[in-house]
Length: 363
Image (cartoon, rainbow, N blue to C red):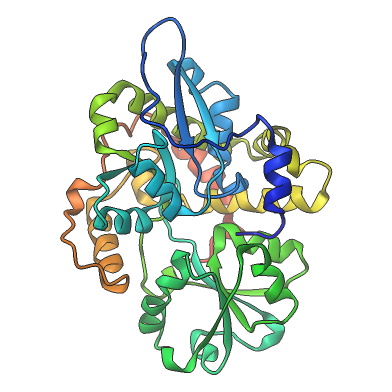
């Protein structure tokens, strides 16, 4: 949701690097034969630095070495990505776990297969000069938000947890292309958004900002990760294993080699080339995504790992604040089956933590 990129220009410039797939049935047909198996995967948004692992998995051959030819497409939000995966228009996707839960409640049989954001990036941003330093300061202010995104829909959870009187807050709805600039220009007092997406363009746009993470006020939910239909997983278990392990290899690369990740990402996406601001924004986003993966689950068990009690907590939070009436079995909406093979050593974790320490805004 950064306005760093004009979406029409982006799509035109992107060319064949990342596709814009249309409707189809499952594309996986021939795994294990001489030709690589063609698979379609959608991101939840534009291929910004938050999703560098998927570019790395594709362009460094982590999927190819496992027999896959993966077409990676840009997305139009986690809700759209979840729906399209649920309808079989993509074989796999990357989407917010909270949004996937909501999509499951609407009747789609989706399963989370591996996280790359164990810590939720949902946040409220404000300029330091506004004097908004804590959640109570939002009362009487106008907050910019995009009505289709999880940060807006889960704001009531943040307000309740932080003691904010929701009736004293006014919202102004903003298109995704003008969100961060509206805050920088003073057109709104604050902005709900994603630390992983919005902080970087605010910083590179000159904003001296305060960041209030929902996580720090008790709203602790999983966020973005690989998803698929249950029928896809059951019909193509080898392909699913290859997709997940390749993505986690890509994630590991972004953790251990951020500068090479940045160069690879810019080379893969023409729209990011030739701009110092684009490079700096991507650098921040890659580092933030790494910070959001510093969690006991992947440290103890391998990248992408779900902790059962945290899945249950995520389901409970989403059901409460998104007013979901459907029964959802937490055990049925995630799987660690294809995780645990891609790990970092204790020394590697230590090095990563030191490098992204300034991006960790939680304890």
